[in-house]
Amino acid sequence: MLTVRDITDQMGLGIAVEGAQHRPVSGCYISDLLSDVMAHGRDGEIWITLQTHPNTVAVAVIKGISAILIPNGRRPDPETMRKAAAENVAIVTTPHTTFTIAGRLYNLFQNDQHPAPG
Amino acid sequence: MSAAEPIEGCFQLMGGDFTNAGAASSELKAILAKRGVSQEVERRVAIAAFEAEMNVIIHAVAGTMHYTITSEAVKVTVTDMGPGIEDIELAMQEGYSTAPDWVREMGWGAGMGLPNIKKNADLFSIDSVVGEGTTLEITIHIKDRPC
Image (cartoon, rainbow over all chains, first blue to last red; front, side, top):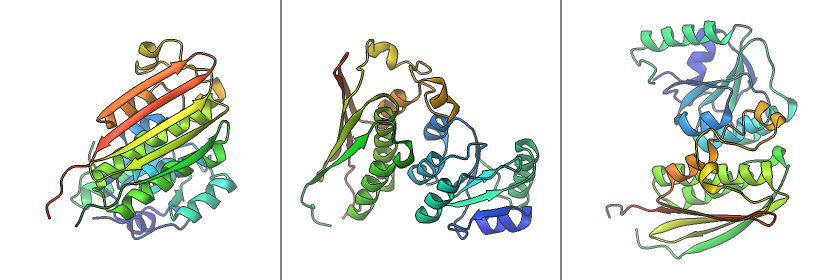
């Protein structure tokens, strides 16, 4: 299974917070609605969101999210980075849009023969 | 594993304290992990507790989260000094929320919290008095594990 580091390296993502790069990634969930991620996100997924505030880290910890991916060249808030470092949650970034990065991620999963569920 | 002694504890919750949102639920999750409950139970308790914690932070002045862990179940009781819920049936409907716009912009207040708590709980009850506060009781059974 792909790890956070595999995805970071192969997709050329920026690392805002190192976190647990060795963690396996089971799939991907995309939502800017934290309540929706609480309801439908799954353990081990990489989560693409435009939200940059510290509650994203709390959601990631509670849901067992492997990494947070912030698109569109956005950066996490300083407090978000501090919390993520304390909780060992990886935050990665990309200048690309959600559509582009999700498409590339989907292909990466396909090529790894572990299709992204859901 | 022999049946462990029941443990209980309590966290204080502060209304409006978004910076520390999730701290109580994360700690409860860690306590459950240390206790050795199944990941499924740990996950369900953490989700239900976090949603209840967020409701206090979003809507109330302050509250408490009390937990009891026995060999049979995890019980989480969240009591707040908040506005209370006028129509519980309506509040339980997915998509209904009284959260202000700025909370919605953060990605909360989509009216999914209470339904998500109910979905993850084996037993769930709400007691609310308008102008006084709300109490949620959440029970999640611990399944028997093979020796």
